[in-house]
Length: 278
Ligand SMILES: NC(=O)c1ccc[n+]([C@@H]2O[C@H](COP(=O)([O-])OP(=O)(O)OC[C@H]3O[C@@H](n4cnc5c(N)ncnc54)[C@H](OP(=O)(O)O)[C@@H]3O)[C@@H](O)[C@H]2O)c1
Image (cartoon, rainbow, N blue to C red; front, side, top):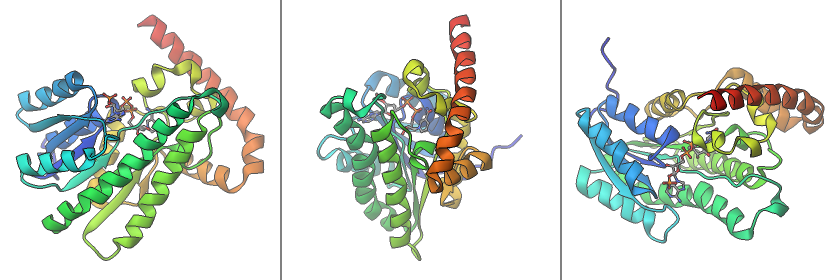
């Protein structure tokens, strides 16, 4: 089977590329001919993903950094453009969460969620636009969440950042309407990565009521979004309809929540059993 090479020779910058969805996206872009720039804080796993891509015949550059450091967006993009000749796609994927009631979290934890999940993508987006304009076209793909489509208690700050990232993306798409720069959002439900599996006891049951995706499935959506610029992708039509109704009709959401939580608890138990069996 021949693989479609939609990104042949294109330069793609991906934040949070050392694990999970970001690493899967880096592999997938490279498999379609993309030259990938991987950013995250931990150098060793980042170099490992880049090394794997290079060993498979691809082109990859690892740039270890914290996206929240002052000047980090400019440093990352300058290096990408200098070493790979320009930038065609930015994927804002790096994200963190500190789960639990707002009162239980420290001010520093809450501020970190906002800095990584919302401020950094905004600043990276602002910084990448001149590079995309120089190329004459480009795409920005922002990784949000179903928690950005419907408020999620016990993940209130995380939920706020993902709502914010979606709002920023849709407003920016309006600013860029008529240009050749696309802005797209991918809003996953639960994804089988350390992001939720390493903290399974603190993940609200409600999250597990939605179908679980793999990192590779979400990576495929990121590639499709970079290619066609579709406004937003969710894991399924069902999740999309449910979160829209849940947002528009909070009373209905309150009535359905216990039912969904029951379904989520059963799914969570199955994942716990899987983890203890492996
Ligand atoms: N997994 C899910 O269920 C799920 C569901 C919906 C949405 N999402 C979203 O999907 C995205 C990726 O999540 P994932 O599941 O792939 O989680 P993951 O495996 O934990 O990956 C998160 C990535 O972000 C990087 N990162 C975190 N803070 C950073 C910082 N300050 N600077 C640079 N890089 C940073 C991490 O590397 P370092 O720690 O080395 O920096 C890592 O590469 C996130 O935005 C998340 O909100 C995930």
